[in-house]
Image: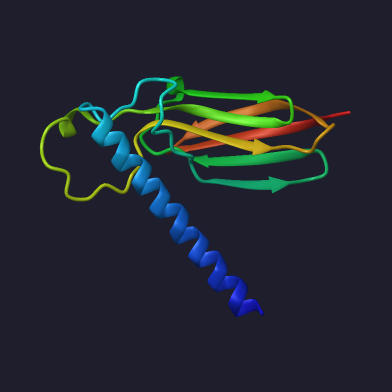
Length: 139
């Protein structure tokens, strides 16, 4: 049973990776500068870790290549939304792409929170490509 669950998780992760690569490929085809205009397809979803305590949720999002001023994080209703852009480095605007694994351009990740429980953003830090956000449950 455990082996089947592990195999399923690995297969699911591979499918998600293939979907991200496909979205990025389509994004490249659609725009010669490799960045889709804001609000247009090509958005990828960054990986996150979530740690829950009685009062807080800690959300750690992997955003390599992003800058703090390019990240928007907010709570809307029962969702935490992390959105922004990771631009293509200037060195890579021309040439042939031989490997494309790092998602660039627009990103957005929506996490469902506990329905009916109000959360506020208590703390946000961005360092070494990781966005660390503390969500506090409001009583």
